[in-house]
Length: 58
Image (cartoon, rainbow, N blue to C red):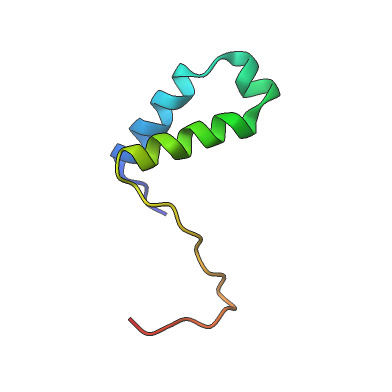
């Protein structure tokens, strides 16, 4: 899977800004901050369908 460098930069900045206690004791809150930061930068986060699910034609 190829991840765009811009997305990596947003995630990295969010992790670097997080306090160590948040990373260790509240990883879910850190994950929420990262997804909010991605959304603020215009990224859309959606679920990828499993290979066994029916897929719609494009």
